[in-house]
Image (cartoon, rainbow, N blue to C red):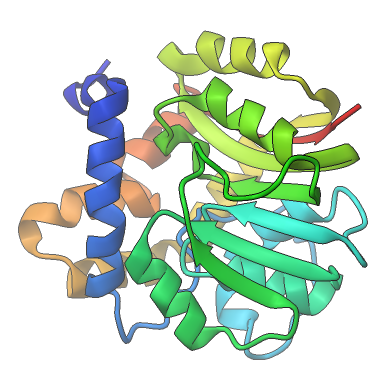
Length: 265
């Protein structure tokens, strides 16, 4: 295990680092129209998702959201996205999958401010809040979405319990994320113990790798132009640029990227 992996394995350290990193990144990317902070997704052959011209630059990130969110019909549903980042996924889902109401929640106040300024979409709202203490009533939501964020949480089982608490009976949790090999057993154990039923599970490593490769040039340019040299190696890992640790670990299977659809009984 690398020093970085050992450091991030400590829950208080992990949360403190992410609590600093995301607002910092939002400020550094200001003006660059970076609406997605997740990795990407591309099938072979290509998925061929039909997009509006305004969405085309973010195709591969959108395709990851589409893969996760389209596992159930969200039309007319009340949906929460936990850790919505810069709101690109929330905007796209609201505009195309037609939930009755969609809330994007994130711990990063700078990110939520950006979302509120950038995404003016009917039936879409953003609020600042903690994934570990969801500010929603018991059994009040039809679906919860979480894309590539739970690795940041200090208490993943606690997060799953919170998701189950706010979901209505019959509601769905649509989820995708990654873990390193030393975390697999703990990850799988938490999911097995969660008060949710697995409807579908899938290893999407190959699709995410292709998406990273398709976004590589753009992400490398953003890292080089927006981050100081000292932080550029971290930025390349965060962006999943080929040659960086995250990409290489995913390629070698030392890291796993998976998606699930859960249902609350």
